[in-house]
Every structure is written in structure tokens, then in C-alpha cells.
Figure 1: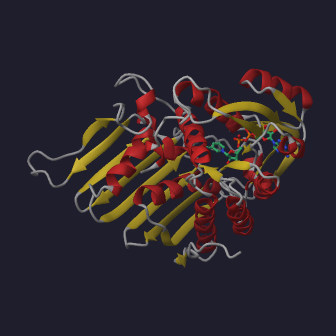
Figure 2: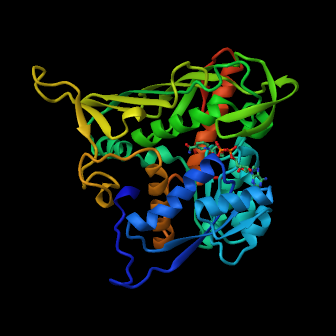
Figure 3: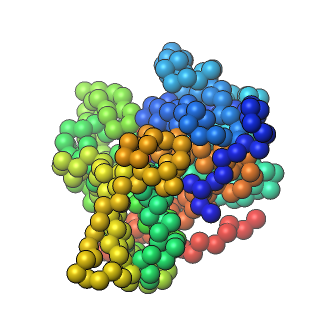
Length: 412
Ligand SMILES: NC(=O)c1ccc[n+]([C@@H]2O[C@H](COP(=O)([O-])OP(=O)(O)OC[C@H]3O[C@@H](n4cnc5c(N)ncnc54)[C@H](O)[C@@H]3O)[C@@H](O)[C@H]2O)c1
């Protein structure tokens, strides 16, 4: 049973209020707003076995974090994430900060006995991701759970595609073709925001967008990438220094320019464990492409295609049908028995980007209540991190085919 199929009874009987799960979130900007939407909404749409309570949010500016708490519905505001973790009313720490703080906050939260949800990419390096995965493994023995925020798994059409592939509808897989294209760095005068600084972000389009599509390719196929051959490029080498930067926007401070230390774009091919071939393109300089994520999977028995700009739809070609009648057909993934749809609107009344964060909150709450391992786990995040590292290694060696370090459990 995949996580989108989790039963919805809270087990306490009708009319009995579910026990609470106190959530504390670090970071309140782009992802902070999206996660807030998830925590605010999940228990009002789905019958959850635990009632998420938005206990406290943390930022560094006292006025700004208080305003964010009021806007997004958090009861309290903290200015030090250590204080947030220490709160008795926080059982789950939700990390929505840039990658340079993921490891430190996650390790401290796990050490303090809290469950953790951490935004992607899990960390800025394989070493950090290994430490986090090991800490999560130890915490698991104490009943604490940890999950990475690869939210696109929670698009109903993507979860349904996985169900079809896992059910054998495509047969033996031959190709996975994934692109994730944005254009907000096309302007060379866009400032040097944290996403363009290696020490803050780990990598560029690769970790930002590539991490998502590597996870999706592995999730959909149920296989890991065995090796990759890659090209990366930084087209704009210097940018204006920023006065502020949040999400995908920033302003220059007028004091000069600094070096861009991450990639603008990453292209790579890869081989899945089964021998199927995969191709990936991640860029933030594809003029006109805003958040264009497409996936196609081809197998011996058929093909599936998904486009995030039409996220309520899945294209399905059944190759076992007589050729005269076969062809891609559009499946509207809004039926009550499609993943996550049992609690939403009547068929055809579609969902959007923000619903992925509602589903993410829902799935994690179910896992915590049941004591089952949530997906994607920190180990899954580590596996993606290893692919990102192999891509960088390959790109540094003129695209030499580079094996991905095997996904072994980190030793105790
Ligand atoms: N799942 C997705 O689709 C998706 C989309 C965007 C970003 N992300 C990930 O989410 C994370 C955050 O990205 P974002 O776009 O929300 O960034 P952002 O710049 O919009 O927000 C970062 C937030 O972190 C806070 N912050 C930074 N350091 C802090 C510290 N030491 N203590 C407390 N608060 C701190 C900032 O004040 C800000 O509120 C990144 O890991 C990014 O890769 C995921």
C-alpha cells in the first residue's frame, strides 16, 4: 500500500477528538508559507489520526517572524531554532530553511526527541546527508520519524502513475525522460541570492531542481540510478550583491558584484539498476519556462507522461491495445479513488501546487500515528544526494560515466 492509500480512521471512534501533534517550523518564507498551508489544511480536509497544532514558527527577525506567525496561523514566534526545538508543545520540527542549516537543525531536533520533516535537498553534501540518515536511524529506534519534503510525489497524477507502473501496466521499463525548467535567472542582473552561493545552497539548478527530478524518476520506477554522465554550466559568472533574497526573488544592494559559485544548468543521462536509460535536464535559465516539470516513462507495454503545468492530468498509452485504436489518452486524475482525491472536490474540480503540501502533511501525520516509516525517508534523501554528487563528479571529468555510490544503510 502506498502512502496515499493510508486508511483515514483515527481509531478513537466517531466524535472523539484526535490527540494533538505539535508542529514547530523553522523558516517562514516561500516553503514556510507552503508548509503552513499544508499544516493548516490537512486536518480540515482529511480525517487524521492526530490533530496537527501549529505551535510555533521560527525566524531571525522578531517583527517579521511575529507577522509571519499571524499571517500563517502559528500560535507562537521564536527567533532561535534551538528554542523552538526545546519547546514542550513541539513534537515535530519542520525545516524550511536554506540547505546550509538543514543538517544542524535536523540533528539537534532528532537528538531532542522530535520527529523531523526537512525540505529538499536533504543536505548540502553527502557527508551531511549520511550524518542525518544515521541520526534518523537511531531516532527511529526511539520511535521518532524523519521525512524529506519531495512534495511532487504528492501530486495525485504522479502518485497514480507510480501505482500504474508498480502494477506492471508499462511492463519492463526502457526510458525515463525528465525535465525541470525555470527562467528566473535568465536576467544576468538578477542578484546573487542564497541559491547562487555554494556554501548556502550546496549546488545550483542541480540541487534545487535536479534533486526533485532524480527523486521522481527513482520514485516512479521504484529503482535507483546506477550511474550518470553529466554536463553542468554556469552561464553568468558574477551577479550583483543582494540586499535581500527570498524564494525566487531578490534585490541588489548596489555595492558591487560577487562570483556565482553554483551551476545555472545541469544535464545528465543515467542508467537505472534494471538497465533502463534516463535523461535529466534542470535549468533556471530557460526563458519562458516558469516551473516546467515534465516526465515520460516508456515501457514494453506502454507509456506514461506528466506535465506539472497540467497537473490534474496523466497521459497514458496502452501499447497492448490494437495499434489502430492505441495512442496517448488523457486521464483526468480527479476521481475519488485516485490517490488523495477521496477527501477533495467532485470529479473534474482540480487541485494545484499547494495541495501537494497538504498531502505531505497528511502522509507524515499518518506515519507518525501508525509508527510506520514515512516516505521519502532520510535514506531516500541521501540516495538523491549521492546522485547529485555523482553528477558533479562526472561534469568535472568531461562527462565521464560515474557510478552512483550504492544505497547501503549507513553503518551504526
Ligand atoms: N519542495 C519544493 O518544491 C521547494 C520549493 C522551494 C524551496 N524548497 C526548499 O526549501 C528550503 C527553503 O527554500 P525557500 O525558497 O523557502 O527559501 P526562502 O529564502 O524563501 O526562505 C528561507 C527562510 O529560512 C529562514 N532562515 C534562514 N536561516 C535561518 C536560521 N538560521 N534560523 C531561522 N530561520 C532561518 C529565512 O529567514 C527564511 O524565512 C530550501 O531547502 C529549498 O531547497 C523546496
